[in-house]
Amino acid sequence: MKETPNILLINPWIYDFAAHDLWSKPLGLLMLGGFLRAHGYQLKLLDCLDIYDPRLQEVQGMKPATRRTFGTGKFYRTEVPKPAALEQFNRSYYRFGITPEIFQERLLEGIEPDVVLVTSTMTYWYPGLQECIRLVKKHFPDVPVVLGGIYTTLCSDHASPNSGADHILPGPGETHILEFLEKLTGYSSQEPFQTSESATFPRPAFDLLPHLDYVCTLTSRGCPYCCPYCASPLLYPQFIRRNPNQVVDELEYWHQVYSIVNVAFYDDALLAGPDEHIMELLSEVRRRKLPLQFHTPNAVHISGLTAEVCETLFVSGFKTLRLGLETSDDERQLKLGGKVRPGAFSGAMVKLTRAGFQADQIGVYLLCGLPGQDPAEVAQSIRMVRDHGARPHLAEYSPIPGTRFWEEAVLCSPFDLAGEPLYHNNSILPCRSEHFGLEELQELKQLCRD
Image 1 (spheres, helix red, strand yellow):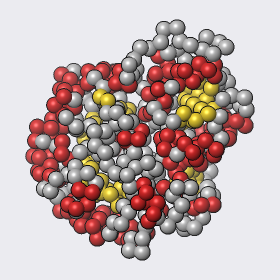
Image 2 (image 1 turned 180 degrees about the vertical axis):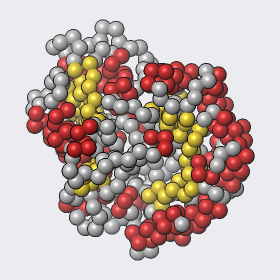
Image 3 (image 1 turned 60 degrees about the horizontal axis):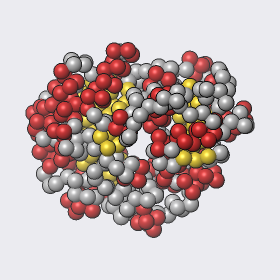
Image 4 (image 1 turned 90 degrees about the vertical axis):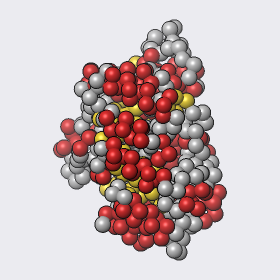
């Protein structure tokens, strides 16, 4: 085996009824790429969600992508037949991203890979990775394909027989990837990057993307909370934080070398213990006079929004904030872990506006379609958010295997959640009831827009 094996990283298509680019980058895959590069591997990335391939503009019948302020927007999309399990739903189904023809052209460009690493995200997006792996095997039948990521970790019993991959690798990829690749390639780094934990990883390999208009960052992994609907404790059992100065070094690099301005935080608990982490990090950003604009698509915990934190977020360049309210119902809040105390949201909105944030900068996530939830509860939450001048955003519930809500979801859902991950799709309202169906969901969406 050659000294430096060639690794092809693939970010697969999204197959779904709807998908939006809300600062969406394959950060986990790119972090793994940076890790492998530090150990001497040669890398190539095939991003199926790339919107900048010039060949896309020549494709007939493809819905074009658009860009909004700060780099978010829509993906290219093509309507495709629905899987048999979803035939009952009277909605168009799409493949989001490049065409299979472009995929194959890019697959055959350059040197044949020694190993292909495919990532996965939502459990119900597995048709996209199945198609990627099928095409890889068509052209490189003898090249081993390894599947990792969220779907692989949460639904390994489904992924192993159904994905088409030669190997699946659940859990954080860096934990076993070096040993695994050595078995596949015979290659072992002579001067490996030394790290005892993911808190000191090399920077993600964003430079593998053909066009970079923003970057995403993780300043921590895991979450100190244990929300009954959330997969974070399953994906990252430990809450590990990176050194704030290392994070700023990374952001400064992308700004200086690639003129990046917009940065999205992917943390699950960005504001937990703010004095020892985010406040120190943002102080360093200001000390270095980095003209960055920050965004929080994963939402921040309202309990962390003290007056000092709000003022620091504003002066440090936060341009959009998503808050994790979940519900205005106090009883439901307790069932969800009691992270937002009565009155905390109102207080946070006062502090944010006093700090300088405008209403159109603040979005609020509200959970919708939880097992046994009444649409009136969601409507009440929407009205409260609007009364405070913020924008309500419905976060339709997606059942996740292994979470505390999973068994309840399986019992109340009319769909085979345990046997078919396609039914985890939040667009179909998996835990619908006679009182809460798609019609009620559309009314709630309209209430958000009114």
